Image 1: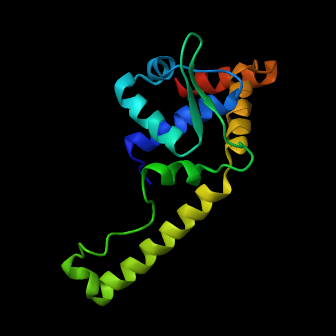
Image 2 (image 1 turned 120 degrees about the vertical axis):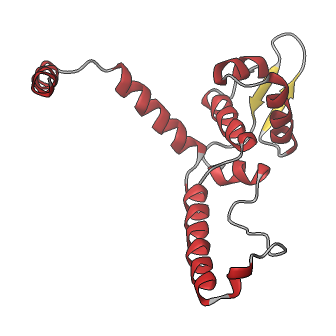
Length: 159
């Protein structure tokens, strides 16, 4: 599933904020980290604020901070703030959709949409933060001498 740019930015931002809910993070800091327009990101953050997921704090040391519950808020909660995943427009039907092939394909696509929604609905921000932390630890862990030796032998065989 390909998410819209606003949705991806919202997920990146919310996970940044939820990692430390006491910290205020500026839109400029997140925009720089993800190499996006600060102006575009500000629109996304305004949408998150309207949804009650983050709050804007003005003044020196201000920015945005997470106000949701990371153990209850799911990826789907954030996604549906910016798009309507899994719901197809019925006003713009293609000609082939009413044929047996089109109906069968529609049934498969509907099942995929339901599975996608269920998956996004089952993953909380807390789960994502744990996954991010595990991946960061794995990147920082030095390889064991046995692993390094095996990698060296494999590289020599590949030459």
